[in-house]
Image (tube, rainbow over all chains, first blue to last red; front, side):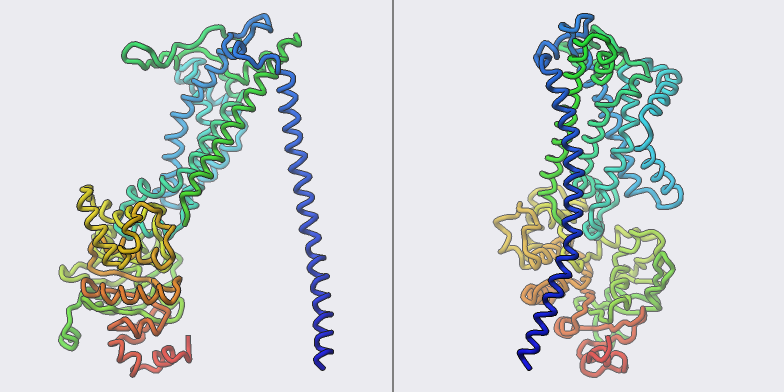
Length: 314
Length: 261
């Protein structure tokens, strides 16, 4: 009797094992498919990047960074472009971050949940997907003509800030939503006001996620071309805007906001449209630099998020 | 009448309390229940009977979520304030009545900052005063000896039982009049549970305690009064030994003896 029972158990086990290995085939299939997709994407990106690096290799030197653009390809550099990009991003940062983070906190913590807040939510998510050229057209009409800000660094900074704003708002809200209810309730239960909860808890715990959103938004802004062309950035510029910091009091000036400018992707666009091959080398080098900057920013975002997550557990 | 019968002081009393969640479900039906000073009052009953809802009415936790509605009163003594009144700020209520939750929920901050937070919210900035009160609260929660050398450590490095005592210290530091416990030991092992039960018996010398528990033995061990709730209604309320030895209602008896629930 016992033997028989054992035998039947064994048979059952074999059936179960066979079933499991059958089911596991899907695991292998999906893992394989995923690997192929990821590999093809990564390899494409890598090949593109390497191509740019190999083409632009002769230009990787300090002269390229410290020279103005020139009619002669060999002497041309990206000084005005990277200074322009940096200053534009500076404006973008100081406009988009306070506005975006504050909106995110307001929408998540303070705003009453009703059809109106739903409408805003849909719109904000939608804005993140609007093609950037549309922001360029909006900026041309609003900032350049209506506000009379001209084709300046300020205009470009504001335009890119519009582009970055939904990214910052959405990531702020998601970071806030990730804070568990019981932590929030703990803070309210000791008698904290809404602002105390926001200030002492919500912002501090959501900090990592917010920072990640900011950096990813900035990385997107640095590569944007279409809206900056639309508002009329210069493609050839052989001077720098006035320096934002000076040696004499008051040490800071804002004249640079009004200055004409170029940015890295436009410089690249300009060179690529020239017929001479020598300019294409410059364009490749610029492209490689933009990709490296973006990679560095995204890498920083991942690193920061990792460091902050290690310190916070629920 | 009660006052004479028990020769005890009422600290708070719910009167004909109804509670409606935002979706319209009525979670409490006409609950009237006293909480005596320096006593432990336990709320027992099957899941979903409204005992946590009742507890969370005492510090207006429901106000955090829009659409929730109270009807009736909770009168807090000695000032005879209806803490459910719309004129009373929920923050004021939470300043007087503190709460310990089911799952230990320390802030992701240092041990010190966790305990000091309630004091900081009340505007205490003096370092020495904070130090003193944090020490006092940690001693009150029997945690001081275990953490005195590592007050700046992050709170989540503590064990579950220690975390819960830390949460008790946090709730204690602000010298509340009533402490609410929402199944405080359901996530803890038996030894940590025993520590917390002993702690509660010490704490009642200083304040009044209202506790929700799923553990009937726990209610029998630590509480002075027990209320049995079912489907949002208060079925029976009496001295704990009365409830557990000689309940007046059949339903209570069924629940306590495990025939139901």
